[in-house]
Length: 251
Image (cartoon, rainbow, N blue to C red; front, top):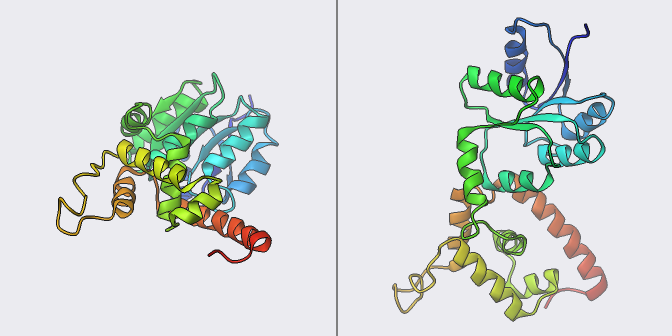
């Protein structure tokens, strides 16, 4: 009988060594291969008949979410265990959008005890059942609640203010009127439970900056993080360059 082959998509050498040691402790023989970025992992996984994957989320070239999205488009039967040090809401939110129906996957935190990590991997890859870390389930509950989950346009607004964009720049980038921008921002503040009256200048001294407050709250919730904002900044710079080429410098 052929040994199961597991692809480990992980750019951190210490985390890769941890998984190596974990598999060596199992009673049954396991073969595994290694990719140190998401793009290489995708190329290797597409060569597998039924991909069995343990994947980090934050990786160079292509992050774990994009890797999974591209792989599942071509091989929806691929079974993936996401293992990450992050339980950020932005990742849980993104993942919920790309998992095909009836696809088996898992999500386990790197900080979990070794037996929990082992159980998660076995359950998904060999027992063909989903396994979600209890801490991640709490985040899933929040992202699935209509009163707290951000819509796509509210998330766009959050990204824009996190990058420091003015109302005028947001309007240009998103093809909105200034009133449309304010409507999106007000909706975002409401979802983040930021009481605008509480931060109004007439109420509390000189008041707080609602934009900054929204970013601070979102960082704590894990809706944004520096790693993903780097990518968003790159995308923004591409747009800005194209915009300037066709419209000239911004006023």
